[in-house]
Length: 91
Image (cartoon, rainbow, N blue to C red; front, side, top):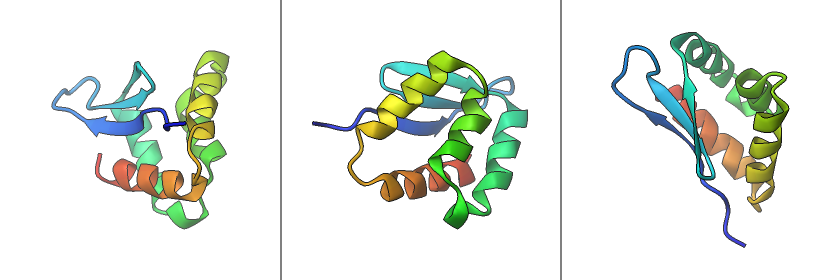
């Protein structure tokens, strides 16, 4: 089984300067959320997928389920977290 697409992308837009791509979906990230994610990425070594998920999806069950399905498609969860934290730091 191949892992689903799960990555952050920085773009040149003042309104939504980044997107999170999960499978075939793209989730626009506003500057405030990006700043919160970056503050959390500082402690990336102790970050968990659940913390990242909660910051992005909040209480939106659809996003939570979509992100959990993407995470489940990866064999190495720790590698996924490290990669996501690195991408967050570069936003």
